[in-house]
Length: 296
Ligand SMILES: Nc1ncnc2c1ncn2[C@@H]1O[C@H](COP(=O)(O)OP(=O)(O)OP(=O)(O)O)[C@@H](O)[C@H]1O
Image (tube, rainbow, N blue to C red; front, side, top):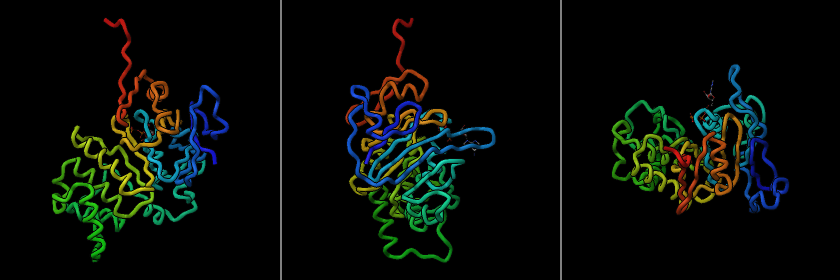
C-alpha cells in the first residue's frame, strides 16, 4: 500500500507517484491501517472559504503534529477528527467511520480529546475529572457511582500523569500545567484509539511545558498503538515521539508526511510566509527567523 506525502499546495500523492530521484526523499513502506482519512475536504462558513481541499491520511500508531499560522485552519481540521464538525464537501473518515453516516456519540467515545478550553463549571477533584473521561461527560452524572474498576483506572492514570499528590485537589485550584495533565488523563480514561491534543502547551511555563511533553512522550510506551494528532503553532512544542507533520496555510496543506521530511526550513517558511531556520537536536525541534546579513 502506498504511503501519503504531500508537498506543495496540491493533493496527496502516492509514494509511487511522487518519488522523483534527487528531489523526493525515500519513503518507507507503510502497512498500518488508516485511522483518519480526509479526501478533498472543504469547509465554508458564510462567504469565508476556510478549508480549500485537504487530503490527509493518518495511520494507526502514528503521532502527527498539525502546524501552521493563526487562522490556517488547524482547529477546524481537528474538529473533523474529533467528530465535532462536518465538512462542507469531501469525505472524512474517523476510525473507519464516515462522518455523516455514523452515530457521533458512539464514535466520540473512541476518541480522547484534550481541549485546553475544557468547559468544567463545578469544582471537581482531579480524580473526578479523570472519571468524567470514563462517563464521557463534563460533570459527574447524577445518581451514578463509579465502580471499583473505574476508581482503580482513574487512580492509575492520575499516578501515570504524575498527579498522585494532587488527586483530591479541586480543578479551580490547579495550575495550568496540572490541568493539562489532568485532561490528558481524562482523555485516556475512555481507553481511546485516537488522542487529539489541541495546543496542549498553551500558557505553560518552561518546566510545565517540558513535563507535559515528557508525559506525551511516555504515552508511546504506556499506550502503544494509540494514534495521536497534536495541534500547535510552535515547533519547540513537539514531543520527540512525533512521527509525522502536516503544515497548513490559508486552508490548504503545504506539506504532509514523515516529520523529518516536512519540517524543513523551506516548507516551514512557506507555511508561515516568513523565512524560518529549522533545527533538530535529540528529537526536539527549534525554529527561528532567518536574520538578513549586513543589517545595521
Ligand atoms: N464557525 C466559524 N464561522 C466563521 N469563521 C470561522 C468558523 N470557524 C473558524 N472560522 C475561521 O476560519 C479560519 C480558520 O480557523 P481555525 O480556528 O481553524 O484556525 P487555526 O489554524 O486553528 O487558528 P489559531 O492558530 O489562531 O487557533 C479563521 O479565519 C477563523 O476565523
